[in-house]
Image 1: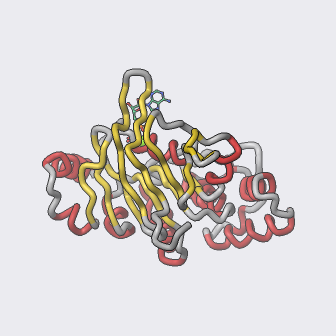
Image 2 (image 1 turned 90 degrees about the vertical axis):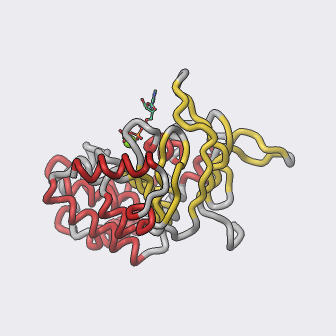
Image 3 (image 1 turned 45 degrees about the vertical axis):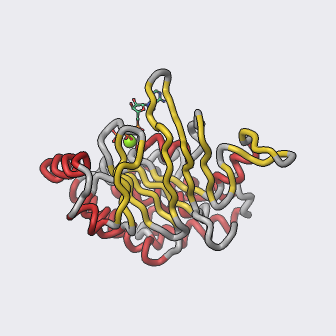
Length: 260
Ligand SMILES: Nc1ncnc2c1ncn2[C@@H]1O[C@H](COP(=O)(O)OP(=O)(O)OP(=O)(O)O)[C@@H](O)[C@H]1O
Ligand SMILES: [Mg+2]
């Protein structure tokens, strides 16, 4: 990857589900180490953007590049062709995701959740994976829960384990999809301050979908307002929240802030 190359590039990306065009010629880029929050109305395609990056969905047009490597395409004999499974897996190793509903492996302990992918996907020896798990649990303040099962944890604790699980893969990019919206209100602040701390202490590139406008303001370097398949406004949080240029952004912010 060239030093000045963006970490994530969407170039004219299209995504349809049947006749429903969710992303239409979507283009944006995220720089290495940048914290970008993605906001926009429900059903507008925010989760779809993250799922495309996780290769859980495939694009119908355009290209996605992560760390200079094609996610949806690769080079073969000097030509761009659709990426194959192996190529996707390699690029995907660089990306971690934390979901709204935690999605921990229910039949594994916290230790198992944190060591499964590093041993199976990265080939890390068990003792190193265990050591990494212990360090990360300390970081998220859950060292005493290493042998617990997910059902024995609160929502906030499960989400902190999910964040530790994503970090166990040492990702360059962390995708967060409304990670506090399934939490009881009193647990939200703890998870958000953990993320803020991570943002301050690491050089991970963050792309976060959030309805927490306070978090977007505190955490992000840049906010993208997304609507009707495209980024309609792209600005630092101070500017976007105080002087949005689009009426659509103003209406959205009023609706979200009134609901809070
Ligand atoms: N697997 C799928 N099959 C068919 N349609 C889908 C699928 N996934 C998403 N969609 C549709 O794509 C559109 C965008 O969905 P998406 O989940 O990306 O929205 P979102 O912006 O994340 O919304 P929310 O804020 O409610 O989470 C919606 O119209 C949804 O119905
Ligand atoms: Mg969503």
